[in-house]
Image 1 (cartoon, chains in turn cyan, blue):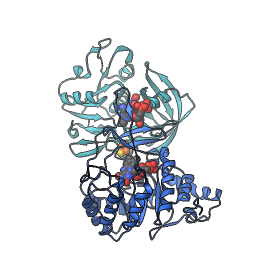
Image 2: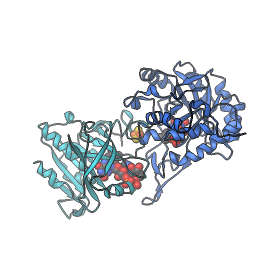
Image 3: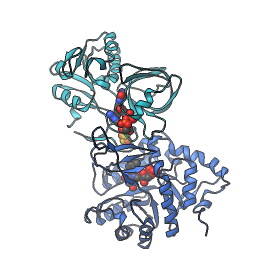
Image 4: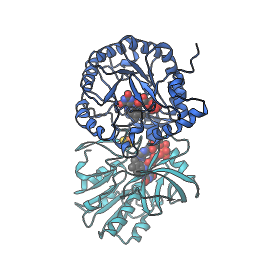
Length: 240
Length: 305
Ligand SMILES: Cc1cc2nc3c(=O)[nH]c(=O)nc-3n(C[C@H](O)[C@H](O)[C@H](O)COP(=O)(O)OP(=O)(O)OC[C@H]3O[C@@H](n4cnc5c(N)ncnc54)[C@H](O)[C@@H]3O)c2cc1C
Ligand SMILES: Cc1cc2nc3c(=O)[nH]c(=O)nc-3n(C[C@H](O)[C@H](O)[C@H](O)COP(=O)(O)O)c2cc1C
Ligand code: FES
């Protein structure tokens, strides 16, 4: 973990309430896809955790949905402004544990960290595919970016206005090894169908680096801190 | 060279800064970030006789200038703390540590303290009496002078280490509780623990915290904490460890002027993991600004007559 002051390069809407923010600054603390940064926002006491979507030596991309005061403030920030972040938090996905053809399953703002993961898997010579779930056509983002990586991409929408009608689970092959990020009911449904994989969880956090016990959840191996021992948990560790 | 040292119940501290219980774990996460030997000491996570899983999630909520928590004293239990956490700590922290103890009955407090009494690394016992008494309708030990005194007596009987009673602010007369602890033999008082509060999610029309209520901490509570330290200083003659919303060197000086011998820093560590080193670094300049040569000289310095 490292405290970094990032400079906003761009901050643009992808849909009505989902934004892409590109930040410039030190990314040396980020070691795996699925890790997150914890952002300080003016006038708010607790930091806001956002997954790293993609990163290189010069900066990183965040994709976030406006749901409350913090993310609303974030959406109003302009290029050139700075953001204080704790970078390189959490364990991230374990690439070595992935088979050759993992299925990446994302729902809503769970999609972004899977983009970085897809890139790393491809770089490691693996052949991932992606299933991206949204509520309706207007909410879809990043399907093109995934397709541009040259991997098979299936989009699902709950109301059928684009792609396959239904949930991500309707598009899942049987007995797949999955890397998942999305709302908890989705994680649970995917867990039921999959034969193995890695699942990224969310929790309200006090610190984001393992100090406060604000985010712990029961697992097969006892309580784990979502922020430090997670956010990615293995298929066999999860206890619903 | 300004003198930051203070003496807390017979033990010299190189400075008065003490990360508060529950915001510093058993030190490990912070030792990865900085040399924690620069601290006066720290108060480790509230430890109970038996392991505790804590409350269901969510345990945390944002508050204006602060936060709410309802962690529910998640900890591995005193035996594991002694056999695993303290040996780990010995590798990263080379000063006496403050052992924070919680309990749900008087016997439980006493037994936990008795076991910690044998640990050389423990310099002080900080006894958190904000917990509900299971034998007393769940009312907190810290809200009744008789109960507070009973815990103090029971703990004093099993240890030779200095006993610091940590008070709950959720009372009408904090001075009465402090006095009861002093009369029962407490060596020191620390305060304040968190103030009970809550938040509601209007979308779900339900409390945000699964436990409904949580403890408020952070800058929001600083004036309340300062007032209570002030009142307790007027009521007792034993040393006080002040805390509640402290986030800067200036806050530390105010706390000490109100009567604190040492100062704990809680929630600030969560928002900024380097909060304590920054405060320690800023203290000499703040002292110079107010014409303070020796920090220990200002303890209670705002009380006149
Ligand atoms: C590890 C992790 C990765 C995340 N990655 C992303 C991401 O890539 N993109 C994205 O849009 N969102 C992500 N989230 C969710 C994001 O953190 C919340 O939407 C955000 O904190 C809401 O802040 P707010 O002030 O707008 O909302 P408010 O509801 O006003 O926030 C109040 C408090 O609740 C917390 N909170 C509210 N919702 C959540 C939530 N779903 N998860 C955790 N804390 C929450 C806030 O952090 C804050 O402390 C992630 C969460 C976690 C834990
Ligand atoms: C996440 C969290 C966990 C806490 N756990 C404990 C605990 O186990 N025992 C205890 O005596 N106090 C506990 N506290 C209270 C703090 O030690 C401190 O008294 C309080 O937060 C006020 O100080 P602050 O405003 O600087 O945080 C906890 C506070 C927080 C924020
Ligand atoms: S948020 Fe503090 S331990 Fe996870």
